[in-house]
Every structure is written in C-alpha cells, then in structure tokens.
Image (cartoon, rainbow, N blue to C red; front, side, top):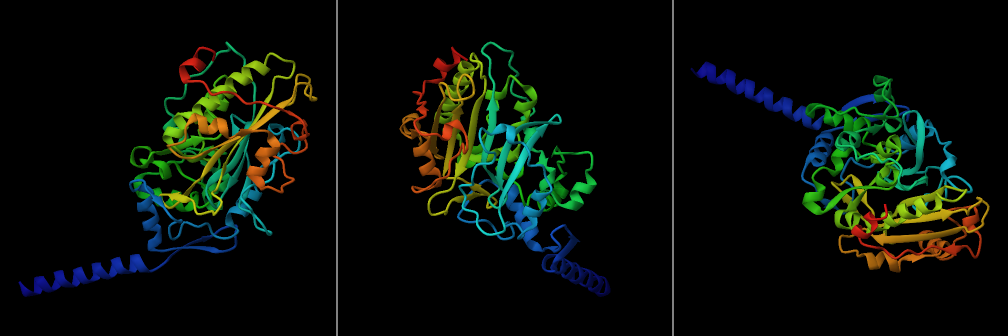
Length: 387
C-alpha cells in the first residue's frame, strides 16, 4: 500500500515538473525571413486565451502582442503594391500615422478577389488596422444587386497570406491571397503566431459587439459594392476592417455611406462614371487609444474623402469633400454633418495645420477652388426610396 502511494507521489512529482518545464521553458520555432528565431513561452498561451476571452478594451497591447521588429515590413515587401488604378492623381497618399526612419509599419496591399484587384489598402501592421482603403466606385441605379453573403463569418476568417510567416505560406501554396485557413481549437495558437503577428484575425473581434459595443467596421463598404459580387465579398477581409462602435457604424456612418451610394448613382449618368473614395482611420492626438483584447487598435476616428474629377475627367464640374467622426456610440448624424469640409480643410485636420500633403495628391481635387459636396444626411427610410 505504501509502495503504491510512493509510486503515485513520484508520478505526481514528475507531472508537476513537466508542467513547470512546459510553462517556463521557451519554445523555439524555425527562423523566418527576418533572420531571427521566433521565441515563445507561456505568453503564447496568455495571448491565445485573451484572444478567445470575452472582449474588453486594454490601455496598451498585451505582453507578446507587439510584432517583432522588421518582420512585418519584410513580409510586406514581398507583396504586390502596383494597384494605382484605385487612386486619382498619385497613388498611395501619405500616411497620417507618423511613420519615420527606415522602418515603416505601413504596408501597401492590393486586395484581390477572383484574380482581380478590387481595392487598395494601406495597412498598419503595428496597430493591425487599415490606415485607409481606396476604391473607385461605379454604381448604376436599377442594376442587379447581390445579397450580403450569408456566410460572411467564414469570409471574415480569411487571412492575408502575404503577412503570414514564410513557413506558413509554404504549407498553404494553393491558398492565396485571402485564405480560409481556420484552425481547430487546439491549433489556434499556431494561426495566432504564424499569421496574427502582422494582422488582425477574426477572433480578435468575437463577442465584442455584445460585450462592449464594438464590431468589425468595413472601410470599403460591402453595400456600395453589391453590384459586383466578387468585390463585395472582398470587402469582408480583416485587412479592410477596423474596430468600430456599433451604434456609430449602424447609425450616422451608415447614413453617410448611403448618401455616397446615391452620389455614385448620380455621377454614373455622366461620361465619367467614376467616384473616387478613400476611407480611413486616425488615432487620437495623444496616441493613447485603446486596444481590443490587447491586440487590435480601437481608432479614435473614422474618416472619408470623396473626389469626382468631372464629367470629362478633366475638371469640368469636379468636386470633393472630407468628413470625419468620433468612433463612439454617442456620435450623432449632426456631428458628422458639422465635420464635413472642403478638402484643404480636411487635409489640415488629417495631416496637421501646416501641411502641404493632400489625400488626393496630384489630382484635380487637389487644386484650389474645387467645389465642395456637403450632403444633408437623411434617415434610412428616405434613402431606401432612392437606392
């Protein structure tokens, strides 16, 4: 009997020792293209548990959630960046996130669906949200429209393969560029480690709408693209998403997007059928924004800039506008209306009072004296009658 107890004690001691070794000894993973070994310890499990935990806002990113220096920029450099057709004037307007020095967190991503470019996103790999998404909208009144995909939760689970590790990309050679590589529960930490370092994952926002009133906010909206099903599906990408207050998203911001849909239908009647729209995010002035689950930045502002280059595309009847709103569930439509302005005034808000930068740099919309489009936001039932 005592011998039996002794064996049990020995086994228990060995088990406890094994647990301690598992927790405290770092797990070394293969060297990636950054030239450094990825070192993970018990923080891996902490990150996994918090990513799956009930949603909350943190004052700063959790331990182990800041990307390894240089890794994301090296991954980004191997991706395609030649989708300038979504910009009017010079492609890729300046960042408003204040990157400096030789290393930049801003990644230029051409969003692809069905082997075609659909829109362009400047993605911040440090904060794991887009700085902006640029799109060219053609929208004909009365044209056939597709329904919002019923399996949008599956589309949100896709990852941008180019921002995953080299090892992960090699294991999924046929899965590109937006890939559904959802992992079983026991392997979620692998996905988090191999792909989540440089981008947000769908699980980062799970449960947040009910818990803290924060949901996945499209930058390039799905509805305005519903006359092209592939483009609409492409918008359900975490690269095109930033955490957004749900009442703001479904309220005044939705009304603004409805007015822009009507505007796109109106200009479609002209010889130049294109409306250029850039939608973005901005941090607070002190850069002390919150982090969703300690992993993804909750931006202080959402903004939109609109440019129409005229009936002939050369300036006749051209107009533009910029607008921003606090990413807050208390923001009302009157707040958005008061924040609509000319593009020069908008650029000063976005880049600073003494700026010479322009969101539509090198285009007719960057010229002095361009007309300003300032819609009055109507209620949803009024918009539905015209859409």
